[in-house]
Image 1 (cartoon, rainbow, N blue to C red):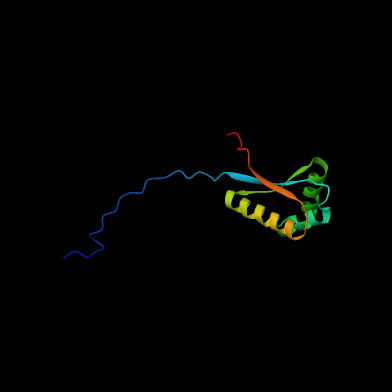
Image 2: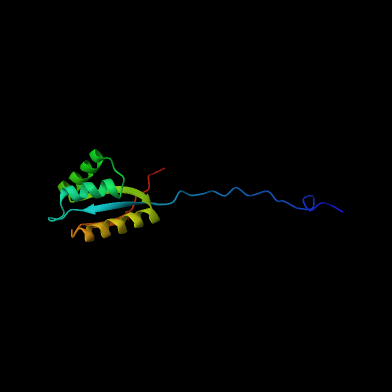
Amino acid sequence: MPKPRDATLTRAREDVAVERPRLWRVLLHNDDYTTQEFVVWLLETVFQKPQAEAFTIMMSVHRSGLGVAGVYTRDVADTKLQRTKELAERHEFPLRASIEPQEEAAT
């Protein structure tokens, strides 16, 4: 009587090409009421940015009206967007945030 292990048939696994997931940019939009200090704090807290980088992003938002808080997979971007909106609302700031697909690099 053959052992169960000897009776198992196996088949070669086909190589499956795995594509990288699309990345999404989390954007912060300038307004006339949200303080610069809050935006820096938000970038440090939600997006784990060092203080100097958070300040640079905040200044980009302030000067050009838009800044990229980070680039993530869709689920992570959605989570960070939701957390940003919750914190802005809790602190009574009208800060707007959105996500958009990252442009894919030409290969």
